[in-house]
Every structure is written in structure tokens, then in C-alpha cells.
Amino acid sequence: MTPSIDDFSTTAIVSTFNRAALVSECVESLLGQTLPPAQIIVVNDGSDDDTEDILRTYGDRIEVVQRANKGKSAGINLALSMARHPLIWIVDDDDLVLPQALAILTGLLKGAPEAGFAYGRYLRFAVDPRTGRQDLFNTGYWETCAPENFLAATLEDFFVHQPGMLVRRAVYDQVGPFDERLPRSQDYDMLIRLARVTLPAPTEAVLFHQRQHDGDRGTAAARFTVDQRELRWIEADKQILQRCYRTLELREYLSSRIIETAEARRHALLQRATIMARKKLWDLALDDLESAALVSGAGLSATEKTTLRRAVFSKYGCRELLADKSVSRRVQRLARRSTGGRQMARTLARGLLWRVKEQLRAGNRLEAGRLASLMLSWGLQPPFSHGSPRPSKQPRES
Image 1 (cartoon, rainbow, N blue to C red):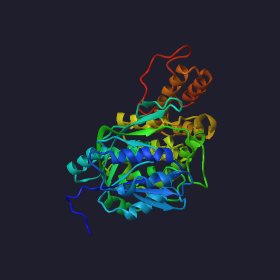
Image 2: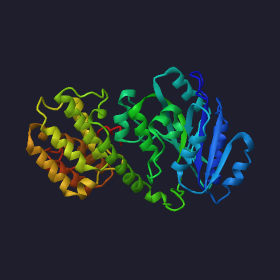
Image 3: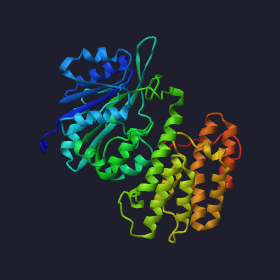
Image 4: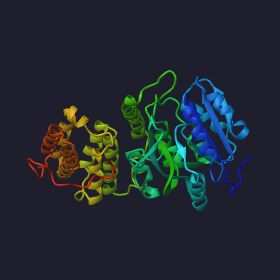
């Protein structure tokens, strides 16, 4: 049956594996909503701890699906096939949604019929294992942006998470299932696909608390520790963005989604280069910068410079620039290619200036010196030669 346009009921979905102690808190937070989900599906993805017994205690308040372990994406895809309502809320089994979350998200979609999904902020938290006390931390990486800029902002870095999102089922149907082949970042891949076909309705309200913990991740066949988490994310994100480079049209990197002038083409190339550099795909980034350097026209605009400086602001740092000398050689060649290329090299170097100061503040003078040498090789003289740098504002991306 096709849902009514006035139907704003929600199916909430949780896929869980061996997190008996945590999933119960997650379910309780769903049941405690001021606007309750019309359906709660919990997929027990082959847990061999007490998860099944704990979920059984909720009776008919939730629908439990028992299955062999196939991974989070497979669990979500199965639950999506069982969803009976036009709005979908996917919640991670270790996070806690705040009581007003669903009411706020539903209100956003009611007020924005053109939006395919709504989203809001989160705070991070950790539980002291000795005392049980919960400590809240800031959001971490977050980008406040207009709906039309959301795709480019998301391609630069993942900042909107599923427990803070409410998505129209029709949009999930349009973009297809979660990619079960990806080892990590399946939610990031899905968010990019959603952002390509629809605009969001955002809020700055905090909607959930994201748990920070040391538990293992991954499927039963490919578990990994918290110490391996960042490397796994980097590798998965590179895989996703390589695919984006092949499949997204260049115009999609602009908020207007239109390229009618040489300047617009150059800006799109610089935006895509920035995205690829932040994902440590410097070969692709420099391919685009070299193409952009050949575009005739006026010098780089202030907007283009601001965009390009972000290329070295990855939340994972940029140590690969020191490890891979071929990147620096290509930036140097870029500076010799044209006036525009020289501007691009110097703009990248100005982005590195913040990294130099960051390392000096942390007492890493050797690392700061190596980055300063890189800046020099790219054509920018550091504004200091020794001693402590002047204080500088930390960029939003850090």
C-alpha cells in the first residue's frame, strides 16, 4: 500500500552484533521517545553473547530478527525490506538517541516537503568503567552548511551520522541498498548517494549521544580493535571516493550543479581536488589541479583559495605529504606550469602553515620544521624562522 503524503510514521532500525550490554540502552532510548517510532526492528546479526535473551525481554514492543552474522549493512538491508512506514531511522546499537530526537526530525520533514532527509547534531560520550559515570564531549568534526552545499561538504568529510538522520523511505528505494561489499564506512557511502539525489533539512539541535568505547568492531570474520579503527576508515573512505571520482559528474562538486563558464569548471576541479586530497588520494587531486592550472581566466578567487586551503585540513592529518616525496615534486611542477598553477601551489602552502603552527604548539618542532621546508619548496616563505609562532585560529576542520 502506498503511504499517504500525510503519513509521518517511522520505522526505527538497529543492527547489532555481540553488544548485549549496549544494545539494551539503545533500545530503551528508542522506546523513550516523546514521539514513539511506529515500528522498531532489531536485527540480531549472529550474536553469541546474551543479546538474544536481552532482546526477548522487550516482548512485542520491538520486532527481533535472528540471523547468521553477515555484517551491519546486510542487517540494515534486511530490516529495510521489512519496514512498514514511510520514514526510516537507523540507529547504531551503541548510541543513545535523546527523547525529543524523532519529534524534531519529523517536524523538519513536515516543514520541508522537498527534503529527502533531515539531520541534526550529536555529542560524544564515554562511560568510566570503574564508576559508571558518563562524560560528555563536544561534537567533533561538524560542518554547518546550506542544504545546496551539503554534498560537497560531505564529500570533504563525513559529519552526519545515522542516529541523527530521518530519511524518507522513497529516497532509500531510489538509491538502492547499503553496499554490503564495503568493510567500513557503509553509512558514509550511503550518505553520499542520498545527497546526490535530494536536499536535506538540517538543524543544529543535538539529537543523540555517540558512544566512544574500546570494543571490537566489524563482522565475526573480520573483527578489529579500536587501535585499527582510523586506518580502516581511511582505507574505506579512499575506496568510496575513488568510486566517486569515476562516477560523479564534475558539475556535482558545485552547489549550483551547473558548469557554464571556464571559471566554474576551474572551481569544480579545485573542489574535487580538495576532496581527493583530504582523502589522501593525492594523485587524483593533482590530476585535477594540473587541469585547473590550464584553464584560462582571472586569478584564483577568494572562494577558490579558501576551498583549496582545506585540501590539507583532513581530520586524519597530512603526514603522507612528508612520506611521499612524489606529491611534493608534482606540486613544484604545478607551480612552474602557469600563473594559476603557482597560485595553487602557494595556496596549498598557506594551508600547511596552520599545520606547522599546530605542531609547534604541540612541541613537535622536528615535524614543524619538515612541514615548513615543504612550504618553502611550494613557494611560500613561513612568516617566522624560529621561536614560537603567533597564535592562530584553529580551522573548523580540525
